[in-house]
Image (cartoon, rainbow, N blue to C red; front, top):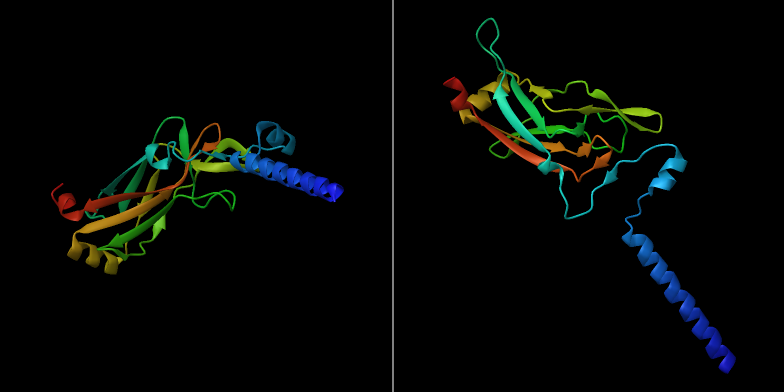
Length: 194
């Protein structure tokens, strides 16, 4: 009987050690450390820990009406990304499937408005994952929205264009922050006075 209790006690001790090891691994965020990453042959953007800065801390937006054409009229809107030095966001489309691209969603009075959006080509960065150099947007990148005639009529009636821009900011060293949905709006009545 004593032998069974010792065996049971040893099993419980092994079980508790396994739980402690699992908890230790889980609190390390399941990310590759620098040595593992180096052995794997590529760098992995590492998400920032919860409670620290997020992408909204590194990216600001400005939205304006596009420059007038020779006919004196434009219906384009230009969304400019103002990104802190040393940071960038992923281009659209993202270079690798699991990366979060920059995406613009437009709405009027809370209703989605699918405005054709022209994303610029990203700059090929020095950050390489596997064999792929990442394409990114830097400070000053402009995204152009080109509403059709029907959408223009809706916008003129309502007088306001609202957008949510999904971005994930990453440092030039490859440290990525949590993605953020950034709101921006343009009162079209204000642009008529310009």
